[in-house]
Image: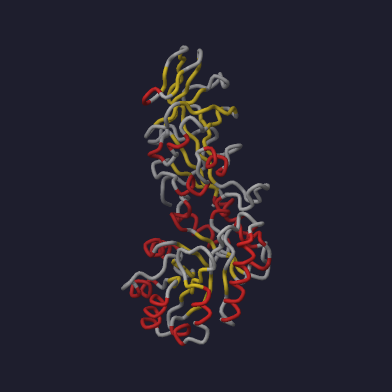
Length: 373
């Protein structure tokens, strides 16, 4: 298993004596339960898993293996290199590569039995000429994102084109722009446009719904759901209760506790000045571990369940907390940076970003513990 130990974490033990003072715990059982919950939203269809970016920072090998055991048979990654790694773990899965077919890469796809997501006429022609119908691929239609994919008119014009069969197209897909905002008009427009495209390719399965799209109703479901973030505990229905189980927990050890007087300053450039006598704790964690520097002066950690503000600048390897309101805090205690009341989306908002960035930025230096697998 990659990224460290698979043994369960001891309660309150953030990794002391293990080479790094912070521990990241990934609950594989929660990931597979989240996959089942999402699959249940569309009983007549199948549910894939997006495991790009090292399974959103949680570890591709561990996550993909757990999902396969749970019954997931199709995964999506972003890059060919990710797909090659996934193939080592999942010898029988259908593995699609979202970022498409790079010129001259068809041989690698064929050798590894991987499926490119073709998003242009050029890619379609190259794959069709190489595979001659023997190698499967997906067709990506752009219904509004304006990143990758064929336009809706160009996709409709391909109906009956012999290249579709020659390219082995076994999935037609698109990507929603604002699925997390169900009231946005663009959702209805994309759903309608994609329905037209899907009708132009009868007999070929279709996929539109990402994590939030799963909750837009049957019109977005089609044959294959394609969740990513929600699998890892992110809220696919912002503004409402999170229907997903939390997956990651990040804890860091308190290295030192000290008292400071009024006027004492903390960290680089003395960005914080004590307004009076305060008690501070220094954590073994910093931006080199993926905790965002943008959380400086804004973020919190939980010490004994008490929210304790971060002071000054988050540095490369250390963070300072004000633990005055948690007087029992002592050297060796664990502070929670993700977990309990600090869910991914809360941490992301506090740092001025999104939970996706927090997840995918999780560093490789932590002691990583997998549970529930």
